Length: 89
Image (cartoon, rainbow, N blue to C red; front, top):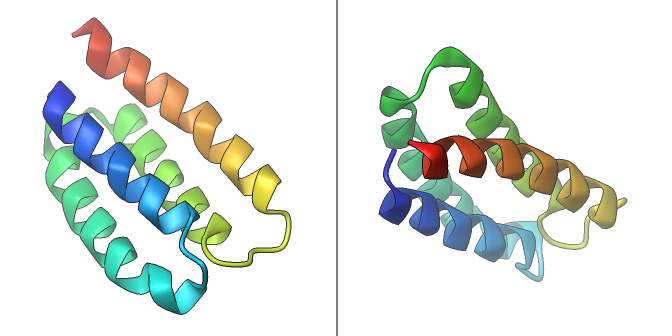
């Protein structure tokens, strides 16, 4: 995964998380899942798993989620690991 793809995924994650409802988040979730599926091909299994977690936590945090801050925190932790790997390459 390159820095441009990482940036694109981050923008989609933000759109998912800060959508006003789960329904509003659906098109962004679809785009995020599509982008993530293409990005996984360049990652080993550990970092592919971290990307899966980022997507999953973003989906949990979308809309008016219960424990939204918790899900965002979980996503940020996984994102940090993934981003560090991509930027180090």
